[in-house]
Length: 63
Image (cartoon, rainbow, N blue to C red; front, side, top):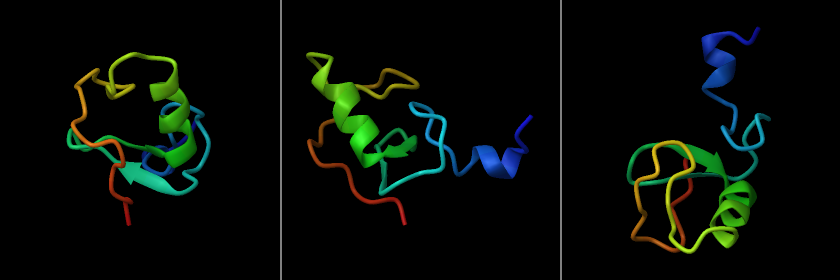
């Protein structure tokens, strides 16, 4: 079982450590490629976790 600190660095889509992390306005973070793939499969740009719609096509990097 992953510790809480390990979970903080894992993408909720691929469940791996973030690669090029981006953050949405709802504060959820994802790998940039995972989010792009998720959005390609859906007509609206929504957060994979909370389903809140994103107004930005290019979310900012999560540094």
